[in-house]
Picture 1 (cartoon, protein in one colour):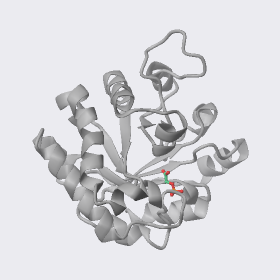
Picture 2: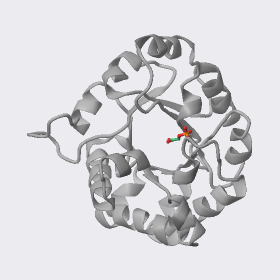
Picture 3: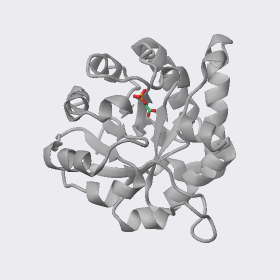
Length: 244
Ligand code: PGA
């Protein structure tokens, strides 16, 4: 029986990368013993990205199982090509595609039901932090998921706390700022299930090789969701090693 949440480092390539970069990572991103490494390239590259050294994850999925939803991808399709994870509710999807807390919760449920591990993203914009509303804002995002998924959320899900002001800006939350919200999230989850003790809560937002170790050393930070720094093999490897 493990006694602590699994350390996970997931690389979110967003709409970046190409086949040659996939090939570079597939050949050279080696297996790490303690950390689960996840590569989340654009969906068209998922099949090509598969490797025994890491898991692959999609960046989104539909909340529907099939049907007239042009451009969307179902969880069963992701599963069929070997996806183990799916990022859901990233702030860029909440913003660019107007995904609501309710829709994010529906997608999380669909992934859980299909046996794919959702990486459910939460996090506040700068104005909310400045107004002192972080816990309320993030609490509502978590509650929407818990209301729909209930106990099933604790079977294999992962949460990523990504303060929006830290994403792609070079402004990382300090380890203490991140830990404070991670501890809050775990406390909220523990109200529903003891299993929250074992849930991996990842931090995301300008994680780089030089700040990863201090963040990952916090008691409630169980790895990271890495954007920009996951696009270069060497920097991604260093971040993975910092979690090992
Ligand atoms: P970043 O992105 O590491 O480039 O800040 C993180 C994310 O959006 O997942």
